[in-house]
Image (cartoon, rainbow, N blue to C red; front, side, top):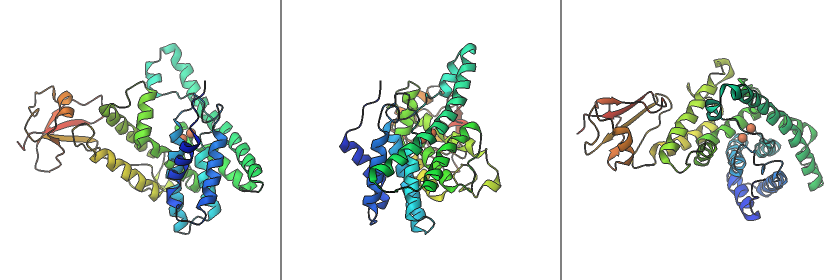
Length: 343
Ligand SMILES: [Fe+2]
Ligand SMILES: [Fe+2]
């Protein structure tokens, strides 16, 4: 069974939204016609509409949107020409063209000892298939695109470059680095991973692990978990692989880091469940207090359950506040603290 094909209008809107950074450029129509054609060419049950596909259809256009923002910045700074912009957009649309069954951490955790070996083997080999076969399929699509436009939209060397990026784009899942001299691959990796801190990406993760995607608490936990993976990915690299945008995360492209900061601030500031909360990916503390003084007793075991529903909880970061430690939530946070000094 394949996933439903998005309507012409929906496809058009997704691509137009993604290409917004270029809306005032005189080559916008050319970019949009290439992207729309490539996207349309991939929408069949062997590719983006495959039910084994790792991600919903919006994944591809969200990665395209991030890549468009990154490429626009490179173009404006004179580091990218128009051909490189087109390559960046093509690589974003095509990067996940070969669907494979996703083996999640949850599946590994729940597996019986007999299943575990096979699942781990499948996970390792499926990443390779995803990249190697994906690169081959992308080459065919790009040659097909040239044919359908009856001109060489992408030259042979450009097709090689795009396919070589797809060939390594998920290498960090195999504990291999994305080399810093392959800037297109660095950009794609970062544009791709940013999906994990978008609302759609977090909901897709929850859906995959059979949790309610509308559950705000679950969304919150998931985004914290995903940010931890950004930190883990950084551990693959040493200082010589940089420069990095900060000391904690794996971002090397400043535009990608800016997108991350915006997405991160949305999660931090928006009141998701009647609590203003902070997600700090650096110190990993979540700090709340209640203006009315509810739930602040050191022995109040109900805090973790009740706090998310209390209208009066707000963030308190003042250095003079004192904190009462309560139980860690599924080891996701180092500590879960409540202020007891401001009542
Ligand atoms: Fe991928
Ligand atoms: Fe992806």
